[in-house]
Length: 417
Ligand SMILES: *[C@@H]1O[C@H](CO)[C@@H](O)[C@H](O)[C@H]1NC(C)=O
Image 1 (cartoon, rainbow, N blue to C red):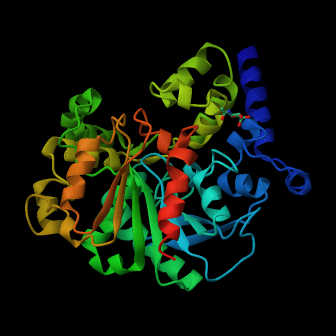
Image 2: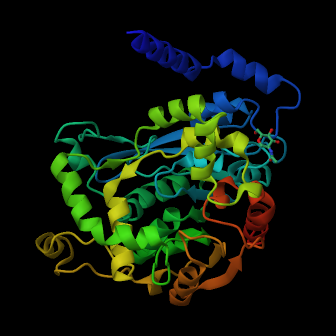
């Protein structure tokens, strides 16, 4: 009984902190020296992206879009800077950022003003747009399908990154072009955010001409050279995995952001459990990882995905091929007109491409990224990050991500304007 009461109090406290009142936000913005980093890790962990961006005095818009197959996506926009380039201007270069697996638009703002890539770009003069893939915390809606519980939810979750690239991205890109009046934009993807770009432009090559450049951060496409043991062990199980989860009626993965936020803000602040939280997030790079920020990072990621996104990567690891989703042969014939899925034709991806990678990245191995580079017809540069210990998560959470990477991206992209 006492335990129930305690849990009740914790939940009540957590939900009370969940709705910081608007006056606070306005006062904060007016206050002198609105900070560089987060000024309150717990509060920032609990806020959603819209309130978090507004809290630090940045202009913000949320756009709600519907894909042709009925998914309702929330796209975020920071149309200009706060300290520099801080007036609306329809001639600004436009940039769109797409997050990785299990993540959301929060990836690009959690490092805070002065550090996070979305703010760095807005200050440098870009009109910044942040995507949210179907099924994540911000895009977990559909015009008819229900993502929650019960057998019905399986229909909602029948998608992998093929659909995110083939359906979500065109919807978002068309909307950005229509809204800004700019015919072309830059695309920055992290990991799966690159996979989806390659899917889009190979399946719908007419989209190539809508991009000025493709900044690929740790692109996930090929797993030919990757020797990561967990991949090698788990990948062969992908089909079994999908079948079991289908049978038990559960295809969402790491989708309960409320739980992770609650856990992170209550248990990942200090003590033994907090050490475990840091260890999960900073895989082996403590000197370039800010442990103070763990509750904030974990409060925003994971943000949910479909199991099929994971199994699709499992297929890539098994086959060593970058190809469309492998359903049962009968369904493959129905969808692709053949019993096995076709490969994505990378010769059709003609956007000027920059490959950025870290030598210590075990998720997206530099040899696989080199191999990807060999397949792309318009590769401009292969750009390893200078710090050789730079890893997969440093692209979004690294202490030195701005110096190592973001400022370089700004330079490259501005050179087109
Ligand atoms: C780590 O994060 C905290 C809170 O955002 C900040 O105050 C501190 O300066 C950061 N440390 C480094 C080394 O970046």
